[in-house]
Each structure stands twice: as C-alpha cells, then as structure tokens.
Amino acid sequence: MAARSVRRATAAILTGATVLSAAACANPGGAAGSGGPEDSAVVGIAYEPETLSPLLGYGKDGNSKIFDGLLAFDARMELRPALAAALPAVSADGLTYTYKLRRGVKFSDGHPFTAADVVFTYRTVLDPRTNNASRTELDALKDVRAVGADTVVFTLKYPYAPFAQRTVLAIAPEHVAGRQDVNTGPFTTKPVGTGPYVLTGWSKGEKLTFEANPDYWGGAPAVKRFVMAVVKDDDVRATRLRAGDLDAAVLPPALAAGFKGDATKKTYAATTYDYRNVTLPTDNPVAGDAAIRRALDLAVDRQAMVDKILDGAGKPAYGPVPTGSPWFARGTERRHDLAGARKILDEAGWKPGPDGVRVRNGVRAAFPLWYLSGDKLRQDHALAYASDARKAGIALTTQAGTWEVIEPRMRTDAVLAGGGSPGDPDFDQYLLLKSTLAGDGFNNMARYADRTVDRALEDGRRTDDPARRRAAYDTVQRQLQKNPGYTFLTHIDHLYVVADRWETTPGGGLGTQVEPHDHGLASGPWWNIEDWKPKKAGESAK
Image (cartoon, rainbow, N blue to C red; front, top):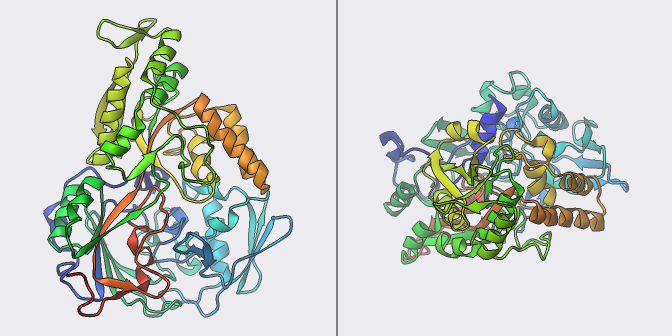
C-alpha cells in the first residue's frame, strides 16, 4: 500500500464523499442499535482506515481496540502501563528507557507476547521500506533491543522529552506480520493483536465488526459485540441514530443539537486539538505571496466561524496549538482587522481592479480553494473564508472533491485542511511545518519553508530542558504570526450523541478524552468501551 494512501485515510474526517449504498444503510449489527442485545453496541463513524496495521500507522496514538501499546492514556490523558508492567525507568541523561513487560499476555491467536514483538514493531516502523507516514515521530530512536523475554530497552540519539508518549504505539506480532509483506500482506486488513477486541469482519465502506477477546489480559469486556458502522453522510448518520439503528454517533454541532430534547440520548463534547486551516501553497504565485498570506490572516473572522458554523462548539485558532493549551504563546492571537488587511495589500502593490479583485503586475489576486466532498464543516469553513477574503479583494474559487482529486493539486491549490494532536507541541508542529517534509503527502501540505521555524522545531525536539523547549515553541508560533504559510481558522469540539444504555466501571465514567484531529474510530466516548457495562433494567433514561 502506498504511504500516501495511509495519509489520505488519516486526513479524511467527519464526512466523506459519497452517500451510503443501500447495503451500507442496512442495519450493520443485525438488529436495531438501541433495541438490540444489551451486550452489543453499534456506533456510527464517518470514515474508515485503509489499514489496520500498526506498522503502517494504525493505533500510533492509542485506543486501537485490537492492539495495545506499552503504555496507554487514561481519561485525563496521563500515561498508565498497558503491555508494560510499569512506567519506564529513564536514565539520568534521558537517553535510555527501560520497560518491564506484563507477563502472561497472549495475542488473540494464543501466541505469547514477548519483548521480540516490541523490537519487531519499532524496527519495522523505522525501516524506510515501510510505508509509514509518521516515521519521523520516532526520529529520536537510535536502537531498541530485547533483554530476555520480558524487558525492552530503547536508546535515543538525543533526549526527546515526549518519548514515553510515543510508546502508546500499538504492538504487532512478529510471528504473523513478520512473515509477510509489511505493506501489502493480509495482516493489514486481518490483524492479530493483544487488545480487548478481535476483528471478525470488515465490509469496506460499510462496517467493522469486533468481538470481545475472552482472554484479554485486562479482563473480558462486558460489551461482547462492537460494530463501527461507516456512515459518511452527516444527515444519514443522524437519521439512523434517531431511528435506533445506531447506539451512538459523531455529529456536527447543528445535527447534535437536534437531540437535546431526547431523554434517551446523551451528548458528549470532547475538547480537542483538532483544527481547520487553509493551506497557502508556496508554489502558487498569489497564495505564496507574503502580503497575501498576512492579509488573509487578518481578514478572516474566526469568532464568527465559531459562533455561526460551530454553534459555539470550538474556539478561534491562531496556529496548531489551541489557546487553552499551556504551550500556547500568548500574544499571538490575531484580531479580525479588515482595514489592516487592505492596508497590507495596498502597500504591497496589490491594487483593486474594476471588479474589486486586486491586481499586481497583471496578476489577479485569485486562486482555487478545495474542500473534501460531503464534509459540511469543511464546506462551511471554506465558504466563510472565501467570503472574508473577497472583502479584502482576494477572490477564491471554492471547489469540492475527493482526496484522489485534491491531492495532485495540493502543490498549487489551497485546501481546507485539518490536523492536530494532543500532548507535546512537537506532535502538533513538526510534521506540519518542517521544510524538509514539504510535499511529503499530507505532511507540510503548504510546502512551508522558514529557517527560523526549522531551527526552533529542531531545538524543541532535541532537548528535554523545559525552558529551552518553551522558548523554541514560542518562537515557532510568533514566527507563524509574522510569516504565515497557513491561515488557521478554528479548533473544533467533537460532539457525540450516545444512547443512555451503559454505565462504566467505578472510576471510569462514560465520557471522552482530549482528542486529536482523527476521531470517531479510536476516539469518542467508546475509547474505553471495554469498560462499559449495560445498565440494569430501569436505570436508563426514560
């Protein structure tokens, strides 16, 4: 499988390009969701992966359900042991991480889990022949080796502060995945893992079906059958939820609001790092112009987008780091300043033409803006952005397409894109802004290049000194304000509507974690579905 295909799968979000076929509209669980067996759950998601192999990127941020990592995130996004028996022992110089492994763990095929599987997974991800678009996230890793069957030692090239967070990466079995082509073998769609669920069926474009792993080391889940119904259209997903065909679904704000009066449903809002932005490709003679970029940064009315498009379920975005993050650089907020945008363009020689569109040296201030077909939120953001730009004298032609249509045009055409990853600022910024990753699939889509940003990204990545890291990521955000290569629009809360049928184990609580850009598959209230239990008769909402 090509690496760009994996990146495309992770880039698609909320809605896709087509209306469901008749088969996909059929009940995926065999019985109506909220009226089905008490020990089953059917959830509606908006996209599906193209692979279920952690070697190609699946489960790299945890919550894969089929697999486990050495560590996992709890409800507060704090690290806890998973396949590791405890948090790692870290050397004084920050270059060695030692993990003791949990004993007695088996893969779902009954084969014992050992340190060799951990070594195999990390070495395979780092192999340039493996089509893993996120390989650079493990750039700090110099070596990984097994010490006996139950100890793994990681050696780093430099002290990488968030390394432990990277060890939530799902572990693949060497005895299965190591005996086939890593990129195209059957393991990519028929995985074997140590997780709480086993994949029992995958009808592409329709559903993924999971059965509880009775031998799961954490205890057999009470929800015995778990179905993820792939419903790309927002309206269809809401309709099926209302009809009882689904037990839960991810929905945009306008549709989630329609369930406020439904006493049998609960709505959960997840705080996220998920942003929407517009790529301003360097190779476009208009979008690549510094004055155009700076003017657009001021012309856009971010708060209006939050109020009107998101119905308040989000915040203005000024970069990849949310304003609520402790890593956000205060003072980098940009106010809506249409007069200021016009002044920048005037001074740069972009003068209004007869139709109000600015012109310089015979070139009109105009370029295409693409968004993903069927994605209502992206469409609304694109139209609002184009409207704001037009007021400054910049004409954007909005066009919808699939990723197959959009990807070949990304070098010169703008795209209403998205991204974001919770946790360390290296996760948010390196793949998005590093000049050496320009044009690498969906990494650095705008082909942004700024020497100050490049240096700061490396400084932040290669030290574990908190003060130096703070200074580095402040520099990145302030330089983005001076030299934007993207226009950041909003950070979006994810909304989920769930039938009130379950409780969770004490200390758990049905709810959400802080979520990344990708959501609905591994994230959502079902991030800990292995802990859910059906409510007793009379406990559900009436």
